[in-house]
Length: 115
Length: 111
Image (cartoon, rainbow over all chains, first blue to last red; front, side, top):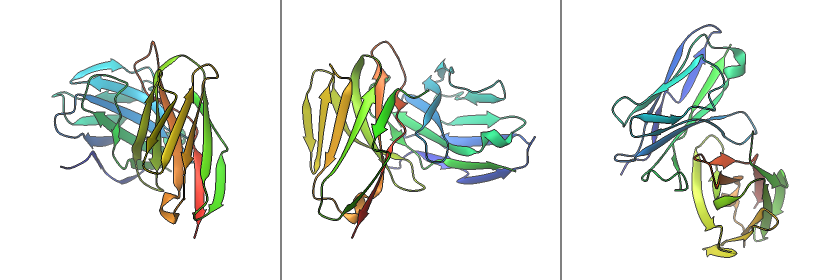
């Protein structure tokens, strides 16, 4: 079956623009995570959903960042009024179980460049 | 903030040699996971070791865990050029709900 799919693969935004990043998890996966990865660094946790419920958004860097998963499948990460420091790869991951200790399946990410 | 730290940050070896990288973490955990990331791609889960396990094998991978020292090691035996990637350890704190990654070890295997 298909893996985790993210779109767009690359996004260039002018500073101040809003962007929306999409994640299609593996069908039937309960848990969905968003991570931010700066160049040469490990992924940093942003937010976590179990089905449609956003259980943890402690990693979102500011109130310009917003994530949703309204029907418990596809998720969108929205960044308003983008800043240069938002430039990074945004990774989505899903797992079959609601257990946070389960292995994660990652998409290939969206590389966001803010100019 | 990152829970784990990998050592070394970068490693360059010849094909056929073994590659060893280490991970240290800060808090009590339920399990520790290792992931691989090829350039421009997402992370791929390699192996999970539970807190009550000391060693685990999967193909050419060997993982150890020392909870008293809060450290783990990943050994790749008989490395291949295709093993060139970044390797990350990741943990969920015993009282937590999110997988937290270290900074990674970048491994280059020269043919």
